[in-house]
Every structure is written in C-alpha cells, then in structure tokens.
Image (spheres, rainbow, N blue to C red):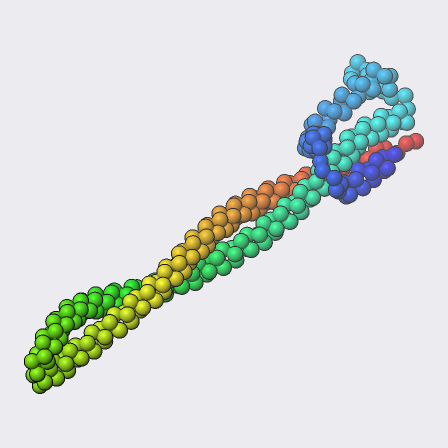
Length: 309
C-alpha cells in the first residue's frame, strides 16, 4: 500500500496538467509547500498527535512511566504504517496540486513568450513603416523645395514681364500721342499740298510712315508681353496648386508618421511589459520546481515502516 501511494505521488508530480489553475489549486500548492517545509520537530509533533488519537481508539496503552504497550508487533506496524500512509497521502495531494501549478506556469510562460515574439514582430513592422514614411516625407520636402525655387524664378520672370509690359504701355501711349501729332502734321501736309509744295509733302509723308511703323511695332510688342504675362500667370497658378497639394501630402505624411511613432511606442511598452511578465513567470516556475525537488527529498526522508509480521 505504501509503494502504491508513493508511486501515485511520483507519477502525478512528473505529469504536468495543461489546463489553467484555479484558486483551489493555489491553496493546495500553498498547503503542500507548508507540508514540504515541515521540520523533524513538526513531524514529531504530528506523530504525537496521531498517537493520542490512536490511544483513544485503543490501539495501545500508556503505563505510568509513559511507556507505550502494544498488544503485538502487528499492532505497532499497523500504527506506523497508518501514520506513514497519512503523510504520503498529504504529500501526494500537494504533489498533484504542485504538478497542476507547474503545468499552469509552463503554459503561462509559453503564452507570454509567444506574446513577446508577436509584439516584437509588430514593433519591427511599425518601425519599418515609420522609416518608410520618414523617407516619403523627405522626398516630398525635396519636391516642395524644387517647386518653391521654380515658383520664385517664375515670379521674378513675371515681375520682369510686368515691368516690360508697363514700359510697352508707356511707349504705346507715347506712340498714340505721336499718331495724333502726325495726324496734325498730315493735315498740315495736305494744306501744304494744296499750295503745291511737293518736296515738303514727300518729306512729311516719309516721316509719317516711319512713325506709323514704329507704332505698329510697339503694339505688337505690347500684345506679345500681354500674352507672355497671361501664360506666366497660368503657369504660376499651376505651380501654386501643385505646391498646395505637396504641402497637404507632407502634412498627411507627417500625421501618419506621428501615428506610427505613437503605435510603435505603445507596442514597445507592451513588449517590455510582456517580457517582464514572462520573466516573473519564469522565476515563479523555477521557484516552484525547486519546491518540487524539496518535496521529493522529503518523500525520501520518510522512514520505511517496519515489515508486518
């Protein structure tokens, strides 16, 4: 009977349970630990308590000198065997609870390790995404700088065109005044022609033709300047629109980068917490396994009962 109980305790302790431990198991583990930590004095006290119970049941009698008298060796062997079996049963219960607890801790440690690996993978992915977003933001900033340079050059060109246009308008006004002046001269030429001054008429006609040609050239230059101004203004508007789009994209990229950074920080905190939990579980498992070894040593310390006669 003793060998069967011991074998059951050893077998249970060597087979961890996969399901989660409940509060009762935790209580059993604490009780089993207390049993393992019993000293020889406590075992002696338990044995004396056991003897007092057996004495009331008539298993033996105590003399005036405090000697214990048994009816036979078989009665003595039966008493020692009963006490040993009781202790073995208590140790077996503690061993079973301890085995369940060890199994629970191993499962918890495995889950914690898997969670740490998963969080680290997510963190690595988020960090790569943040780096890509940062690179994209750099490219956008470079494009924006190039467009800003083009816009500045175009504005300078437009300013120059506006100045040239103003000068052309001034010259056109001067040409218009000159046309009016020439019209007056033409009237005078006609009057002189009526008087028969052919030489003066030819000279004035040549002068009027030259002035008209100059006015035509000024008007053509004015038209070209206005067309260039309109084209430059349209290009400027397109560049401004593109710059606004790039600015919006840069803002969106910066926002996404900030969000990725926040998620990466959160994952880092979760990963560190999971690693700390896994470390605590590992320490707890190591302590529990050490207690299990102490329990096994306690089983070996129990003296074998005397053989029955």
